[in-house]
Image (cartoon, rainbow, N blue to C red; front, side, top):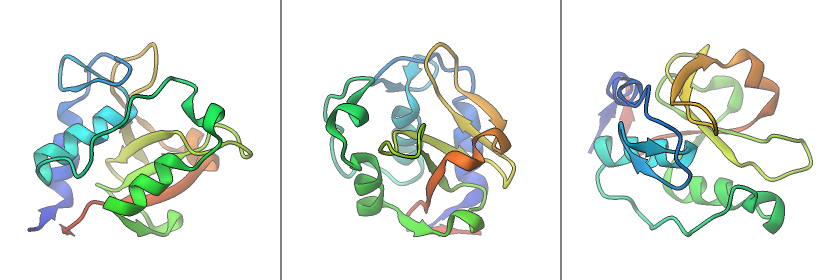
Length: 144
């Protein structure tokens, strides 16, 4: 199976305006950053490869584990952070010493869609986030 980058980007953009809802993953109903990636996965790849466990907003700080990076590594293809492209999943740390806990989907090399608390899914510039970028991953079967 293959999926074009343009298809991933178009799918991610359809989520714009979806309200933030912790642990949700329903387009136009609610999602968090993981829910956005899960929803795009379902549309462009198919069934989710594993069930997301329940998690609290502070799960990364509490556990101190790279849970998000480990899961991404199991299901996506790593790409160099300085070479990500439209359609790739971006993983961020809020602080250098903390585990990664935020996701976005690149819509270009300068913009991404993401969900965060108190806001709807939006397409934003990556520049303010770039220093927090911890990893990048391609969807399985991605083609140009």
